[in-house]
Amino acid sequence: MTSPLSQTASYTQDYSYVSKVFFYFGLAVLTSAAGTYAGFTYLAELFIANPISMYVLFAVELIIIFTSRLWAEKRPLNYLLFIAFSFITGVTIVPLLALFLVEFGPEIIIKALLATTCTFAATAIFGWVTKKSLSGMSGFLWAGLLGMIVVSVIGIFVPWGNTFEMVFAGIGVVLFSAFTMYDIQRIKMMQEMTPMEAALNLYLDLFNLFIYILRLMGAVSRD
Image 1 (cartoon, rainbow, N blue to C red):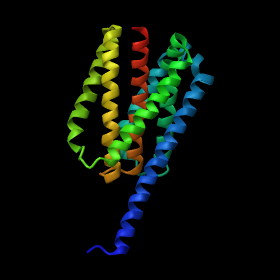
Image 2 (image 1 turned 90 degrees about the horizontal axis):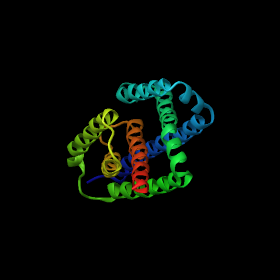
Image 3 (image 1 turned 120 degrees about the horizontal axis):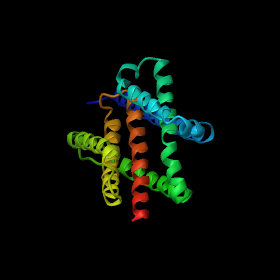
Image 4 (image 1 turned 30 degrees about the vertical axis):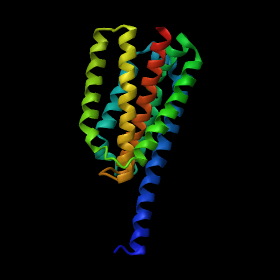
């Protein structure tokens, strides 16, 4: 029989882990918002005059994310790289937001933010409260993500029409909604991730969900 003391210790450990995850997650969201503001305010002209600078930032993002397991527990390097990644992702979304602002106005971005918040909250709550294990989704999710990446690369060389954009963006919304449920349940179960790694996964779910909801709304508006 489990003693009350051990139950209290287990609860404290669980609470500490989850609270750290959501602290880092909130920090990432705020830092990303600061990056977007800085991008619009100070860096937009640089991107227009020197487009290659955007690709440099994308390369930095990829290096940071693919080396996350190497630095996630090394202080203070982990804090510096975590904040740098969040800030850079906020900066690199500026050209996409600018395109939608010119084409549709600020209303579509506000609607996408609201839709993202509601979708993320609903899927996160489901992932937290469901008693069904979502671990079996792992293979499907990563296969889907790989497929999305391949199609995106092909799309650079073979542009697609608005109907395909609508379908592609819709699949992206479903995929990252599912990732949110999966990652939230992993956080609840504290499965083999540091709090910073878990927060980074959750932040990427939210970030990509927003991008695909925005693209879906844009495609629907053009149709």
